[in-house]
Image 1 (cartoon, rainbow, N blue to C red):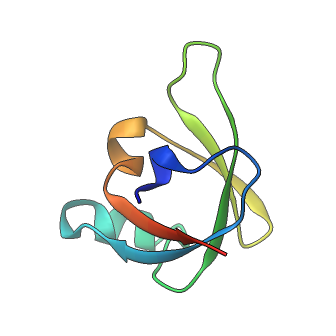
Image 2: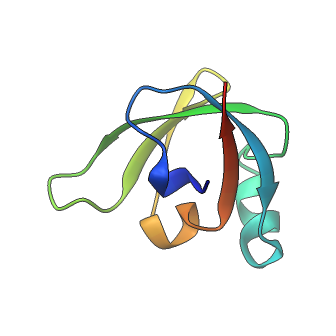
Length: 72
């Protein structure tokens, strides 16, 4: 499943990150093996607020669709 399919406040492990955004989000800590969860969406639904490595990060849904996760 991709990150946009993950229910709010459900922990998941990142399986893979599409190469097209991998170098950008990788610098922000979004790497395979890391734990991540979707905290909330903005009022219009985009971007999503994520929690990873004890900090919050906002990514567009189009970027979140390129991140594959598995629910723990």
